[in-house]
Amino acid sequence: MDKILKVAKRLKTFTLDDIVMFCDIDEKSAIEFLAQSENIKQNGKFYEYVETSVTASNLKIIDLNKKVENSDISTCKACEIFLENCKNRNLKASTIKDYKSFINAHITPYFKNILLKNITVADVEKFTNYLRNNNVPDRRIKNILTLLNQIIKYFQKEGYIEKNCVFQVKRLEKIPKREVQILSVQQLKQLFKITKKKYPYLLTIIQKVITLKQPLNTILTGGEQEKESLKRKIRKDFYKIKKELGLSNYMFDDLRFIKC
Image (cartoon, rainbow, N blue to C red; front, side, top):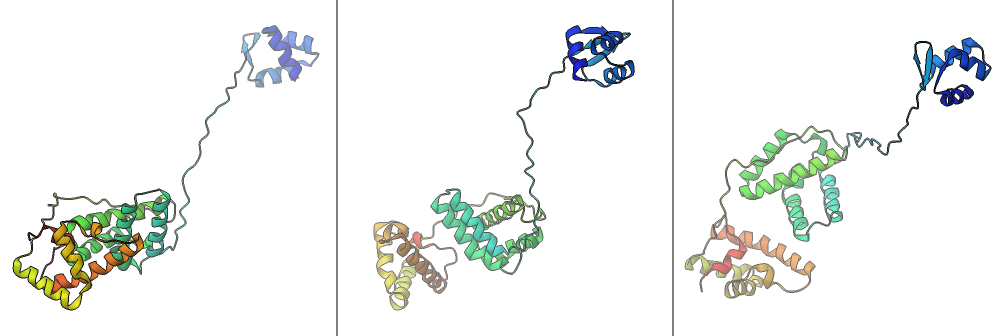
């Protein structure tokens, strides 16, 4: 039937008889073809050839929806994967360090026996109350919850779990900035007494912070791994010292504001 299209294209306007004659075809076959062809339009007893333009599209729709695997991944394992992903995204070392601190100190200890897919908004509310009951400051709680939300959203987006836990961390009122506490003369004497007796290695460090008026991070020397190990030890021991002194919201770096 290509011959009919060639003749029609050449004639532009023609009759059925023209097609039968020029194409040497029977009338019935010619009528059937002309009626079915997209290039032929009938106008009364005449037919017209119409060029149909085929425009190639450079667009393609790609389905990015990910099939949910309903994974049995634990919250601890999910946190490990999330932290590795953070490293690949070239986040600041300080940011990753904060994430590790929030995860190791709060998120994994609380959710260690719960699969990530089973965490609900109600669980997040209970977790918030748990942090508050353990005297975690509101500013830190907000950062911890924001990180937990990021972890859950990441695995929802990657298709590991259903979107059953969707929440937003909203601050109801502005959290006041923590005020620096200044130790009294009596508290300072007690601090040195406890440190000298139980944690003698801390004496020199404390004296440097007070004298040089600089934070702990700038006082310590050595390699990064060595400094991090010592900082963990200092935080752990200083927490015990604070309990003996009856200080609840005191930070090690507050020592630099003591007036000598």
